[in-house]
Image 1: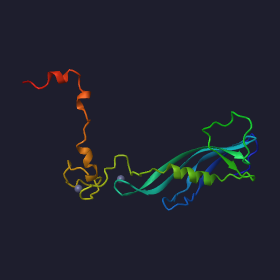
Image 2 (image 1 turned 120 degrees about the vertical axis):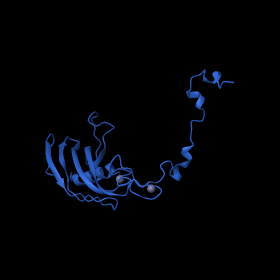
Image 3 (image 1 turned 135 degrees about the horizontal axis):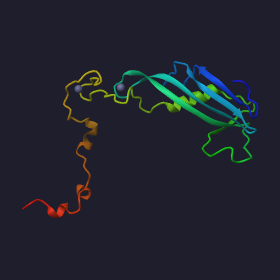
Image 4 (image 1 turned 120 degrees about the horizontal axis):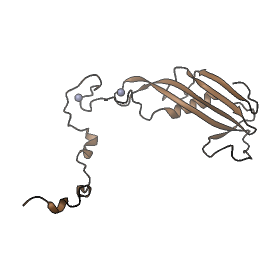
Length: 182
Ligand SMILES: [Zn+2]
Ligand SMILES: [Zn+2]
């Protein structure tokens, strides 16, 4: 990105390959979007919206799919690491990092960090993915395996018999006084 003078606002189209630098995910398609950078006397800020897709494996059905990632960048960088003397410009919500004295901001690195943060904890190929049958391993998105529906995943079995500890409290107060007919 070009140099930004104080008070100047620079807009740019971002379309670059971003190396994730982790084995967890590969950004194998260009990251694209619009970014703008601006300078105040003490800071350099970067804003923009970027989009990317990445190949992932569904955590439910283990199928391969492409995860869409949309990130919003809104960061302010302290120039030279010196604190900003005049208050008001920076709120506590701002993510402020010191910028080296050469004032070079690596937009690709900022995008890389945001993309990694945007990755879902458990990727799901689609919201209604039915996953694999816990009994036979069939992909329930593709076919009905016929396993008994009422059988509960053994790991969840303790929850099957769970009930509110005192059901009476959720019922009308006079319910108990009527009681079963004698
Ligand atoms: Zn899935
Ligand atoms: Zn099954």
